[in-house]
Length: 456
Image (tube, rainbow, N blue to C red; front, side, top):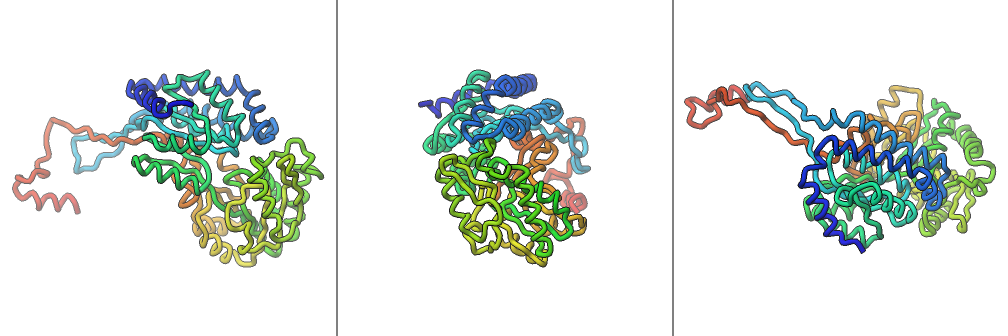
């Protein structure tokens, strides 16, 4: 068993040498990370296949490729991001200059989930390295092959005092959280997020929490139904529906409900075949407990399409439920599986009202050709991020920081957002010694009079 306290001290001592603050050190570490991923691509794909039955296409597009692009973008921009930047100075500070110095926090803890076990461990690590921190990764024990691989690769490519992986279950997480870190980055469920935040508060440690919630998707009467069906099916059912920003439930305008549902049924067959359970590339559910939880939801409403499942394979068909109300169990918490409940509406105002009565979602999706309607929904509903006429796709842009709001999370990352998350912005005023401004001193004659003139 690894001595966690000793590891944290080892990283803290290394951070104090200030080597990680050197820009060339950071760039070299990012290039090493990229090399590690490229040289181990086959092993990563195999581990994801073993843990979640991910196809090579899904493993590369949603786990490997996305972090390689993040590294490329970061390497291109990190020198600019790390540079102290001069900002404006008010007239009251005449003679001085103002700067902001981005500096690393120190030793950071990254706790990653099981649904994208490689991507969601490495993506925040990129920001931590770029900002100049040391980092300890805690992968999920529910994807043991990926966790074991991450531990081996990081050990082979990095010094333990700079980057390390600690494997284990809940007890390991508890031991890690009992240590004093300079920053904690957590991706996972709301209940566990509360535990992380409580533990961090004991040391006044800042946190980023990437959580989840019930992300709504609205299909208005003027939507392009065929394209909406394709993009919703893609976003909802990828990775077995185990995506924190997947459309959790669907609101469809009553006048278009029948047409849309028929189009969605056709699209699901196109993407997953006539017999999805026989599709060798269908992502499996992570555990038997999670499988049984999802299977119980299929008793709600009526099965419009799908509904099949295999406990032996831990697979559930892409399933659409109709006749759903907010009183059904499936509407209580985030589904996190390949089941899509559908509600109908006549008045968009009622939809907005229903969404606003519930915890703020991590994502929201709206399908409509009406720009006025876009602005109405965007201005009326608070959510982490989302898309107009698409789903999930916003997460892949390095120019769009990704994060939640309220119970769906706090803080954001991706692109410069990752660098900013793992950096403290230190404000510095550089004052002249060529002259002094006397009115700030209490012995200046009529000082209060002049102070009031300055601070209107």
